[in-house]
Amino acid sequence: MNPKIVIDKIRNLSNPTILFIGANRGDELSNFDNSFSNGIMHLIEPEPKLKDTILGSASKLKNFQYKYHTFAISDEEKEVDWFTSSGLCSGTILQPGNFPNIKNSGHTVQCKSLDQFVEEEGIKHIDLIWCDAEGSEMEILRGGQKAFGITNFALLEIANAWWKPRDKDPISNKKVLEILKSFSYNYEIVLKQSINILIKNTKFN
Image 1 (tube, rainbow, N blue to C red):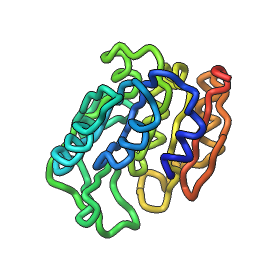
Image 2 (image 1 turned 120 degrees about the vertical axis):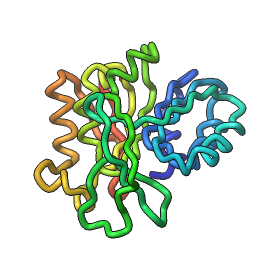
Image 3 (image 1 turned 120 degrees about the horizontal axis):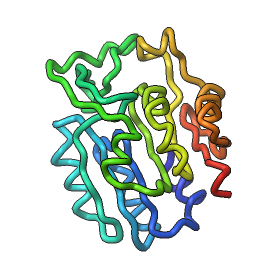
Image 4 (image 1 turned 135 degrees about the vertical axis):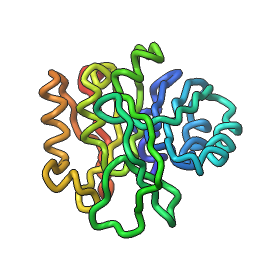
């Protein structure tokens, strides 16, 4: 999703805490840095080939502090195989289905649940979760029962076709809201663009 569209929805927030889950190269960072006077970014990206690129993007930030994390976010703490795209230099913890460019990288990554990460970092409020986790959004949701209770906005990618686990456990806009509802949270969809949705916790209206 175009970050400028998201920023228009959250522009009134002050000193935002933003989690980039699947930060990739950090292409979106400058848009947020130019739109807020202060804040902190957590940049979560397990792909080792992207380290220099994302740190290069982060080093240019003027208004945000940042922390860089090299684990993946999932539903629980575990070690899993890491699958890498040969062309896009991105990766996933999910076994690919109809995506021939993604292969097993031959190494593993450490995973934490979103709740574990938030507790370890002492995060009390999240203004935005920008999640581009290449298919593992369902796992992230299920491991974030407490975290989504303190989150204002979340951007999620709703895609099934590329990932084998989604064959038996498909994700949809409806299922995302149902999972959050099962945690006793009321979220609403405020933006849709292609396969991305921006949801808002009505608790913070």
